[in-house]
Image (cartoon, rainbow over all chains, first blue to last red; front, side, top):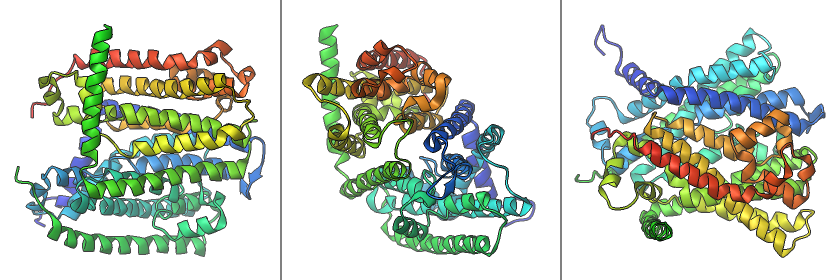
Length: 267
Length: 270
């Protein structure tokens, strides 16, 4: 890294964010539809509770708050189109990425992170709507808010690494639409973005909490809705850190093997 | 007019068959997709299963009634995605310049967009939708006669066309303004909120989801007819009885809108 220049990764992130933000109408529709979604989810969960104060031991306010935060996280952290890597493998343009001075993993993660970053204003507006409706309670304290932010960022890191791993299967199968579909739905369900893990039958909830998905959404949301942070909070954040390290290692490993597999069409 | 329509349908059938074959060409992906479809549908089933198991009735609708509504919605969605799903790719086609190719060929570009590829995963929506319908229909408090069965068939077909019409119109907007992820967000509003009795959205909400966004026509309105629940509607009952007819109308309107917008096409030049 030379002095006076920002690192290449920062430039990659900024460019990726810019390439999302440049489509203004897309941004506008995205904001409106997330706000609409927040309102609809609020109504659905209110109707589901229909006067009951608690179902399966979960209070009405916690469940509604969770469902709305889950919807915001789902849209922000788990977008449909998360990496251009697969289309670049299938049409061969990945060759240009391979000859760049920045590694493909840095490039791909940077691009994804930039794109997610561009979605943050939308998420904040969604959050503001939820707070204004009284659908999501404000965090219980500064410590909770801080723990939530840290845990969310770790959750995001886990989501990006999982995306990268799925995108890299393109080196083996070329077409990966199938893999994306599985991943998208599995991530939405298993991460607890659709229904909190609290409502799932015991064995299923236990099984899901052992997968990296719950660390993407369920962990930060339970910290937000939880009481004062305690040892348990620290343990969950520690668990997320372990996932980040493990998935980063796995990505490197898969990437090494992918390099041996890569075939560029003559085009 | 009729001869032209037949010609278009034939062209669609030919191209769709080719896309179908092409989608099986990547074996790894085919295997992947079959596993994928099972996982996706499994997740959907788990979602609705966990929800119904925990909450039982929703807005006075019993579990079999909600299951019937859910089955109708998913089957309609399956019809929409298997036959018309590819319109979503038009945004990326425009952005990357693929659309230029369609203009060089002697077939309606709209049909070429629809048949650019076939997404195997969509068969899963249709398959699971039909399965849920088959399970929920006998359990629901409905006396099935040839008339109700044919109304159900017309309703899910019409529902699929309603969804297709709205989404095709939205895709048409891509010619004017570059919309990419936003459209996907709008369509998930469609898929995620179509399976609830509309009364939960309140009076204004139910109106909005009937007239502003015709979500109610996809499954809710015809379902109230089948279940004999038209009394709870906030809109006139004849709308519910006529709901299956909304499909072809909206599809045609969506198609006309798409074609009109396509006149504003400007190539990216690559």
